[in-house]
Structure formats: structure tokens, C-alpha cells
Length: 233
Image (tube, rainbow, N blue to C red):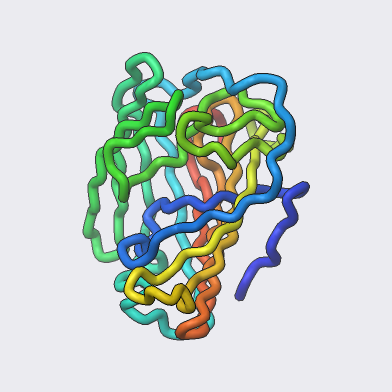
């Protein structure tokens, strides 16, 4: 049921609050490995343009029933027909996105989002934000003014029908503490994995692992790009 966790030198990880519904009941204390030296800060290139769309499939797995204190709507991941992100406008380093979370029963959840790819500042804290500067290289810090401890671990070639494209990946782990437990003895260990297309800066794959100690339960959420008009998929 659970995919094997990938190491830092193989494939991607990032604590991405991206629509993970537990954020309302926890505060994050991110624990990251020592940051490597980097020769320069990331250049801020925007790789998407208005009209680009990216469609994802979502899946969620757990070792048992997920209580509402962890995620009141965890089943939504397996009730999803698709999640679509469309670039509505690009203004300097600010990118406006229209998103549609379409459920199997026809329900559509819209969450407009604006992301400044130079800083990582977003307009909707609960919306999609896995869009990054284009053309980043290994050891460059992602959103240096916001996320000081997250950097590019490497780049992998990915084959598509239109040819080979490069995908950046980065990693992070963390600990989420239950806000109603002042002793910090109720917590969740996090391990997330993220790939994004280097040329556009858009998410291609995400694996988000959560291991809770009270109750003892593990969850895993998958995002996978299934279609786009930005290249021949």
C-alpha cells in the first residue's frame, strides 16, 4: 500500500501543505538536514504562460480509518476525478492560477491562487502553490526570502513522447505538533517528495507521508501529472 520512501539523492521531498487538510490542527516545526553551500541565489525566471494547463490525479492511502482530528475529509483524495491548474495571467514574477478540484460526483471546488515565484508569497494559504522559478540548478534555495532551508537536491531527465525534459527535485522532513496538546507529546512525522519540471517550474509528482503517534496511523497522498499542454505528454 505504501511506496518506499526515496532517499535525498534519488528523488524529491518537500513538506508541502498543498491541500493537506491537517494544517488547521497543527503547527509545523520543520527539521531539515544541513544546507549545502550554494554559489548564487536562484534567478527568478517564470516558465509558464497564460493558457498553460496542468492536470493531476490524486490518491490517498492510510493504515486505518483517518479520524477527523487528523483530516476531516481525507477520503476526498480517492473521490477525485482530477485536479486542474490553469495559468490565467503572468505579471512580472506573479502568476495567477485558476484551479478546479473535480470530484467523482461532479462537485467542483475552485480555489484561485496568485503566486509570486520570486518570494513564494501566495494569496490563498490553502490553495495550490507548487509552482517554482524556472531553470533552477542543484543547491539553489527555493524561495530564498520565505523558505531558507529548502533547496534543489538535483535534476533528473524524464522521457515524454515529445522528448526528454529535465525535472528538479528537493527534499524535506518535519514534525507537526497537535496545537491542543501543550506537552508536544502528540505529533506527526512528515516526509514529502516533490518533482517539478525545470523549464516551467510546475509540479509533476508529489508524495506526502504522515506518521502519527496518537492515534498511531500513517497516511500517504499522491499527486501525479496526467496531462498538460505545455509539452507533449
